[in-house]
Length: 262
Image (tube, rainbow, N blue to C red; front, top):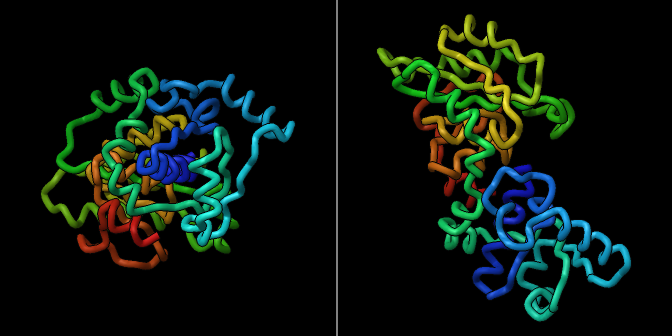
C-alpha cells in the first residue's frame, strides 16, 4: 500500500508542477482509506474503464522503470501532451517536487474520518502516557526480502523497546504494535522489554498506518509503511538495520532526511 502511496505522490507532485491531471488506479478501487479516494475520477468504475482501455490498446501504457526516464524529453513530452495515458513503474521519482508539494500531498492523502473513527476511539480510551512509541513488526515476505536482513524475532523487537524506554527515565512509555504477523507475542514483548503498557493495534492497513502516525516516535525495519507513517506529523523514525545495534536519541531521523536519502 505505501509503495503505491509514495509512487503516486511522486507523479502527483510532477502533475502539479506541470499542469497535468493525475488519477491513481490503485486508490480508485483498492486502498480507499485516504481522501484521494473521495476526489473526482477516483472510483472503481474509472479503474475498470482504464484497465479495459489498456487491454484493448486504446490507451497507451508507459512503463517508467529506468531512472533516466524522469528527465527524458520524449517521455516528458508524452506525459504532458497525451490526452490520456497510463504511467506505470517505480522509477518516476521527483523528490524535490514531492517536498515542494508536501502540504498538497498531506491533504490529498489525509485519512478518511469514517475509516479511522473506530481506532481513534480506541486510541483515546488507552491509558495516558508521557511518550508513545509506534512499533512496526514486519514479517511475512521479509523472511525472504533482502535475504531476510530485516526479519527480526520478537526478542529483538523487545530489546529495542527496552532500549527506547531507557531513553526516557521516569516517563510512562506506551507502545502500539502494528504487525502483519498474527503470531507476534505481545506478552513476550512486554515482559522482555519491561513495558507493561503495550498494545497490539489489530487494524487493517489503513488503521495501522493511522495509529503509527499518531505515535510520538516510530521504530521498525526498513519499510515504506513506517516511512509514510512518519510523514503525517513528521515523527522521529528509526529503521532497524541489525539485531544487535544500540538505540540512542541520535538513531532517530525525520521524514525529509530519510526520504531524500532513498
